[in-house]
Image (cartoon, rainbow, N blue to C red; front, side):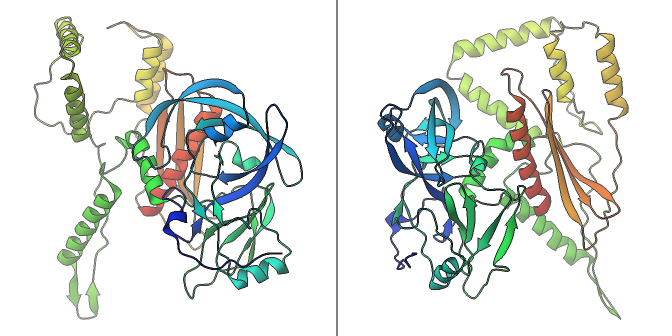
Amino acid sequence: MLKQMSTRNNSEEDWDSRSCLQADVFLLTGKARIKHAKTGKLQEVQVLLDTGADKSFVEKELADELELPILRTVDLVMYTFGAKEPKADKCDITSARIWDDQGEPIDLTLCKTDIISGRGKQVVLSKADVDYLEKCHIDLSDLQESTIRPKILLGCDQMWNLIKFPCEQHVLPSGLRVIPSRLGYLLTGRNALKGEKPSNTSCKLIESDRELSINPREEIEKWDQFWNGDAAGIDEFTGPMVTERAIVAKRVHEFFNETIEKREDGYYVRLPFKDNRDSLPNNYKLAHRRLVTVLQKLSEEPCLLKQYDEIFKDQLQKGMIEESINKERSASVVHYPPHQAQNLWRHDYSWDQTLSQPLQQQWEKLLQSFEQKFPRYIPTTANNQIVLFADASEIAMAICAYMVSQDSSHLLMAKSKLSPIKTRTTIPKLEMNALTMSARLTLSVLNA
């Protein structure tokens, strides 16, 4: 039987900013049984399913208690619990086996970390929620505990093995969602506002529906900082989103005041079209800022700075580089396709060496297809959909966003990113990065 829990406000038991947007927002948490590596003894452990993480973790205290084996050690850059900035650290990789609610084993590969999350309070169910669950014969996993302290966090790399697809999910009268999983039924979502009712009480959970977790704004901003370099040369504005919206709103307001006309049959206003972008932004301010940062770091190591200076002077004397003294801005910004330069770097060409015929053909083909025309006007209908395609190869990751209707499709925006050449990255990891870029591009298109 389900217990209706009394409402209690305790700030020490509230989820931290990593776990919820407000006090009534909850991520997917459940219980599983985990096995001691040597004794074989089983014990219950709370598990957090987090779509905002690309890796899975286990607390060191639990891993040491269960004597889980260390498979290898890797270098990771990650945001630890409560941290404002990312931290580079060596992380032990371990393996563990948990059992679901049907007694079936699930093998996991986990990264050891000091702490996963703070202590949180359990979901408080209303009487209407309890009645709905009893009517549908739904027993929730991990409902009786008064507090939640997950010891295992499953990210996107492994959590989807626990979600049942396709299967029916339920929306409670309070707005919370009941998600079927191999750990039992899990609660997630946000309580509906006062007087607001959910649009439905039952809907189908399909494999492409992955809105099972709500990331806090602080977590999203951390990812924005991680991907800022990826937007260089593509975004029209390189500052924070709040500042950009304020500037655009001011321009639209000024344009409205300047163009509005009063006529006999009413007021006439003009649409505030964006300015034509005949050339790509040069990102001079961004490059200057990075140069200043590098010089500040090198000023702390005079010997290293002197070595850089000698290298530049030597390259200047040999004609490998030249000083730019033309302060006049050109009519258009020169853009160097990055993948071409990366490909030449891999072939280890020397200075002024003639390119091979295949590379010359690639370059000529690139030049011929570089200019493309796209219509500024995209017709909208009631059944328009935004469709994104994301793909990755050993060379690069690419994403395209289309506005699709029944009889037409129009490209809205495209984005690409080269795969690193210093480290060998697997195709699955590049595909996951492409999906992340696709999600970010979706938000950019919807907010445009």
